[in-house]
Amino acid sequence: MTYGLCFLLVLLVLGMIGIASNPTPYFAILGLVTVAGVGCGIMIGCGGSFLSLILFLIYLGGMLVVFAYSAALSAEPFPEAWGGRFVVLRVAVYTLAVGAVAEVFWGSWYEGSLVVVDSLKEFSTLRGDVGGVAVMYSWGGGMLVICAWVLLLTLFVVLEVTRGLSRNVLRAV
Image 1 (cartoon, rainbow, N blue to C red):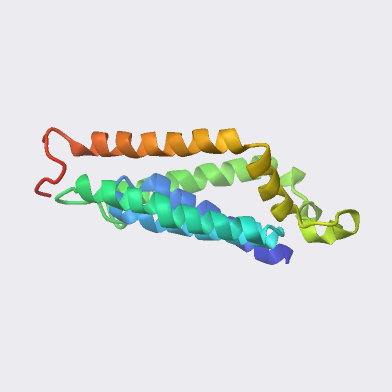
Image 2: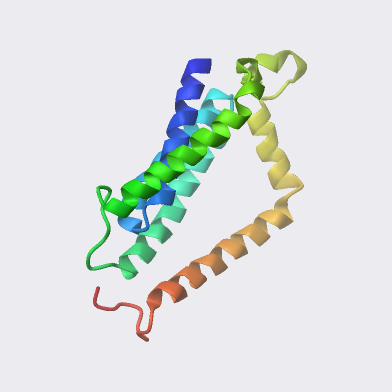
């Protein structure tokens, strides 16, 4: 179980390096999907299967549609590919930076810190993730409405930024 979670954590870091190193949205989307899927796998490994499913459905179902729409409106005629000189240089720099940070914190890493939530079920009558969703909707209802409005505002801001100098919504790409 620990080896599986460590493998997923390595994939998460590699996906984040893929997002950060590529300036073109077409190729960075692969890293974004990788990070979302691996992050949900890490949550499943730690015992949060319900929240992982909700995160995967909401994130990939909603936010990636907005990302794909904005990427289509901000199309580049000659996107920079994965094998480009500057992309490979960025990947090398980010990998060395992650390796340096890992070297600094390597002594404080313990395998016993990865504890599954369901292993402590003797002290609880409900699963931790389902109880958290209930609390989110009961006590955090106002914040949930505010977050929905912020996401709607973010949608309009992204569409306004990617529209460019043209005044119509659809332009020749």
